[in-house]
Amino acid sequence: MASPDRPIALVTGGSRGIGAATSLRLASAGFHVAVNYFSNRTAADEVVARIKADGGSALAVQGDVRDEEQAARMIEQAAPDGRLDVLVCNAAAATFTPTPVSALSWSDFRTKVTDELASAYVLAQRALALMEKQKRGSIVFVSSTVADGPPAPGMTAHGTAKAALNTFAQFLACEAGPMGVRVNVVAPGFVRTEASAHMPKAVQKQLADRAPLGRLAEADDVARAIAMLVGDDARFVTGAVVPVDGGSTVSRM
Ligand SMILES: NC(=O)c1ccc[n+]([C@@H]2O[C@H](COP(=O)([O-])OP(=O)(O)OC[C@H]3O[C@@H](n4cnc5c(N)ncnc54)[C@H](OP(=O)(O)O)[C@@H]3O)[C@@H](O)[C@H]2O)c1
Image (tube, rainbow, N blue to C red):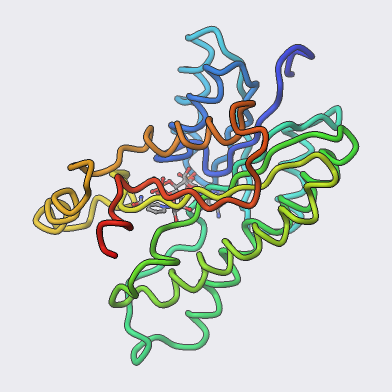
């Protein structure tokens, strides 16, 4: 149970990769963190244990973010007394294999797009209902630079899904602002996580060389941007899509 002194954050997919780094960073900023996971309980327990070992507060929350009832239950577990300060919709629930449109079935395309939006919609709606009562709160969606960048081969479904997520977030920011709730997006480029480990090393090197900051992103680079957006230093920032890509997007212009 969270102490009444600590703000509460729910991080979806908070057990591995960008989500784990975000859980750790928000915990070190004083949040009680609900660390959501889907199937890997051990990874979630490890993040919770690391947070507690550092004097923080956290609990693991199982649930499939694509499922309406499970998403609602996750909010209840994260915020048992109806208090929720931060929601980070990060889970990599809409998995995909890069495929050109000519070889991608409508069914697979639809699944990718609807999974991405389902992962955000119910959680954001439920979180907003709690935050509206508090007249404060912050929601961050984890998107991707693939939504706005030059169309990358085979990435139509992923790019379309993330672009829809960005647009959803901007509509939500307009609706949530008068409730005292901020809504923003971080858009990472390539980030070194288990999900991206299959990328050939030569391609990773090309991406690092192309970035003005000269390296690939680590999960904590994205976590820091999320922590900044949910913090008071960003108190007048809403509806923003913040690239976290070492400048790769601008260097392509
Ligand atoms: N890595 C990149 O290069 C990159 C670049 C741009 C954007 N992103 C975005 O960043 C986010 C995180 O990616 P990542 O690379 O950190 O992924 P990751 O290392 O594979 O971690 C995925 C996390 O999502 C959880 N998850 C998967 N399916 C879920 C579901 N249905 N319900 C709830 N949780 C679920 C996993 O939990 P379990 O382990 O329990 O399954 C795990 O905690 C994604 O939205 C991704 O699109 C990543």
